[in-house]
Length: 108
Length: 121
Image (cartoon, rainbow over all chains, first blue to last red; front, side):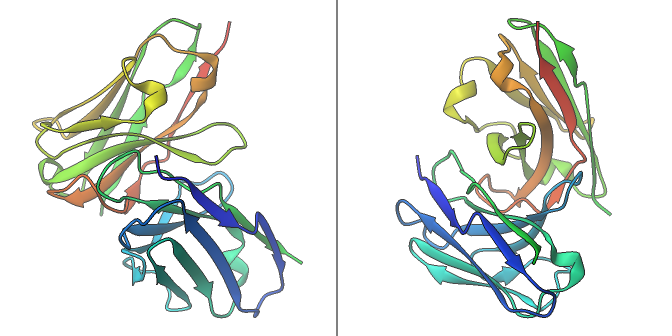
């Protein structure tokens, strides 16, 4: 099983700041990696798939990068609606397609 | 637009069974892999199972193998999760999620609102 490790667990930031979230896989996932946003009481929402492709309707301030085992989600200028928990998930060839434990982005 | 609506959750005693349903609309259900993902109270997301578009391939996370069965009825645009021998650690909100066109390995681009399963004596 591929273990996905996200860092940091919590990030305290102010609106307008640039935010970088990290996700590390215990082995290569061949860039088959997605990022999700989840707000309290809501279902997750797909932001990024295949490491760097934005899902439909996702603002351009969200971008994904990385390769192999190291991946990053960047929010170029944090908006008030972006305070949420962010999860990475791999979907490399064989399941289970594990999620990271999440990074909470909170107001500083 | 894509809509996924889970149902069937509730409170159940350990060792008992429950069947979840997910009614899909707004897309060609029979062409997409479909997943179940769960989230224990206050915890992160856990991928549970996937079923290919035609029902021929199914995969599970280890903790539910032999107890849970994923299935679908493409004539009814509905995904199911039969959960047997339930344990307290299965307590979670269960989400169904839409996967990829013709494939099982993909990002999950649409999610239902979830249904809560509570396993308790």
